[in-house]
Length: 98
Length: 479
Image 1 (cartoon, rainbow over the protein chains, first blue to last red):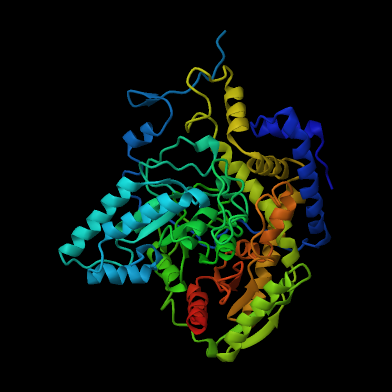
Image 2: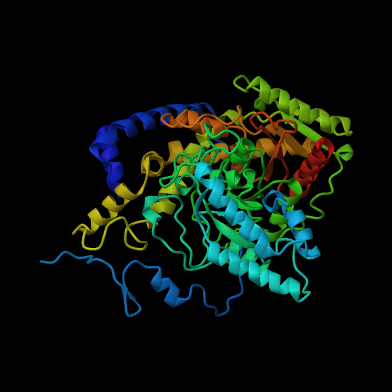
């Protein structure tokens, strides 16, 4: 059973874009260790011939009519965005300035 | 006349008879919330103006002798992870504290169409992650039956509102226990509907393959009315579907086989809970139901299976909360310079500890090298758990089980031990892994004691079996 080290926790936090302050790390590591320890139960079951579940539904080809409609009104969609100007969404710069 | 004590059915009758108006009843609920909710904390916010306007509209229809539906003019509470256009929807998280919804959730559209009145939005565990509502980043909710105890979670606000007569009924959402557990702890009825029976569009997603919206109500009959109003295909949710439910309240116990899974009556179940469930069994067996022992051998794997599957979905679903698409936690001008830091610090400040635990765990189980050992394994075990139910349902029409091993626990008792908290869900969670319907109904005769709920689990889309038997129990045991 894998354990999560301080280094791998920091790596996971980076992948998840989640800032975890130093003082929360220790508690989080302890919790994860407990939780993963509980999961070792699962390794005892032979699942070699079991087809994994994919999602919660058994529906197939769940389509709707392909006709024109207004989903979210553009005005309201823009309004609910934190920063906009003249109907355009404003986001922070993606590329670093030279 | 205490208008706030009425159930949905009686409100409908009263409105049609002209005993009171929807405005009067809505006002009486809002007043009662003002008086009582300071102690309980069921609501994150009320919507008095919208509610009164909705009520006025229904009163106009009644005055014009128009036909009105069973929920017209009925004041309801909505869990704050469902969107109502123009109202805040916070999921009880700092990261969405200032988010205002741009559209109505599928269930809200349906309820509005039926003339329901929305009193306000109720508290929950942050992003519906928890079993006690203590993970709310915004408020503490107390159990109206004992203010030192938790209301259960994650739909704790909705359950407390119904239990304290602060709403005639409510909507919650249930991913592993979140409608049924609080219903049981607070002494109200809670229905987790079949996966796909109710639209999830506009429900802030936690684990999409298990999330399902369901009603909380004072009676089984009311829960059936709410279920009927929200069920059905919504083209905004491709997993939702129509089904023929038949008469929802017409089950005949003498023609039914009730299975009792032996794995649900294990050590660790409070003797009082066990005795309560046995008393329910006796009511059904005296009415002619055949009681059968069944086995769900993979029950003990449900909690570990869930805590591998769900975080994977959480880490994906919550990736959208990045400080850019929704109002963040930074004041204007305070935003970090680097894009990575905007994401990371917004999420670091905006999410509470349980949400962070689940995101990290989900990122871990999906990461290369661990995917097969954890995520795939969990999905295989999920299949075995579903197969257990399918096998049991060959012999039984419904299953009777406890909701939780104990009645409501004390505030703070499990807050520092996530694993102990997770285990409160051991008897209700398997239902979500298999996509089945389950209902929590209060065991009768406990008015002076902490409430205990019993669970009836039905076959897919057989809500009628569990609602019908629940209704039978309620009628038979009514004082």
